[in-house]
Image (cartoon, rainbow, N blue to C red; front, side):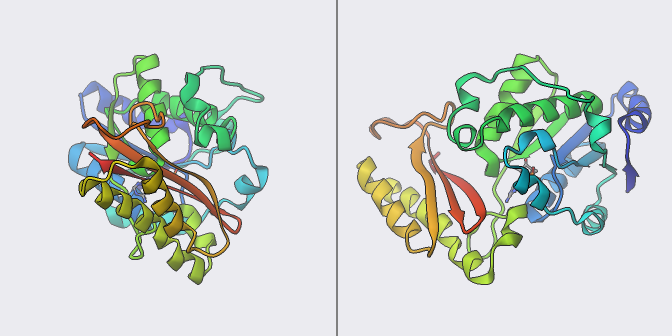
Length: 283
Ligand code: AMP
């Protein structure tokens, strides 16, 4: 695997590949890689001629400077993981390569950037849109791979591609989980062993709702209460939101009568660690 540190160098490498119509797969990440990231990479390797993974901790998507400062950056370990997974290029730019001084981003994703994660982390999705737009322009991938783990982010990227009419195929990959059921995340390393084990109940709350619906339950407040009961078995949990929404707009569902798909979304805090998760509770 070649490590490429500037967008200029990456363009020199990719230009001839583009001219010869090679399929370019792209997996953008913020590093501290785990099996979730690697699952995206493996799919990209299967479906493309050449695969680029980026590791860039994007400052503009952090609304909390402490979170940015504490974000894990184990780059040597990341390089080993990428190499053994068969990645072709790691794009590892620094902030000055991506952003000009004081650069801003004005594109609006409308309501989608203000609800749920957007409400809890003001400005977050503007930062995500800004960096992914930049990275897409540098890499110009044929296929881009994102995780369902960050469900709202996938809708933002879908809208980014539509709004700017980008010729990029978006692939959404399933959530990879730890043995306890906890969705893998670069932030899980901040949990202590007890927190990490008990955080598996987030998955249990989702799975319980999915099962109840499959058995015919239609009582939204009862479903939500059951999920809350399971979550509240986790000590010191602070629940930010638990809701059942439609997967295309993330609007709260008023009733469960139709056959339309349903998504449950959860955000909690365990000590200083924020965790998000989701599941199609009816596909
Ligand atoms: P991040 O490094 O957190 O920005 O994540 C980079 C990409 O990996 C995003 O598209 C995430 O949705 C995806 N991802 C993160 N965690 C998981 C997971 N547990 N399973 C699948 N994809 C994931």
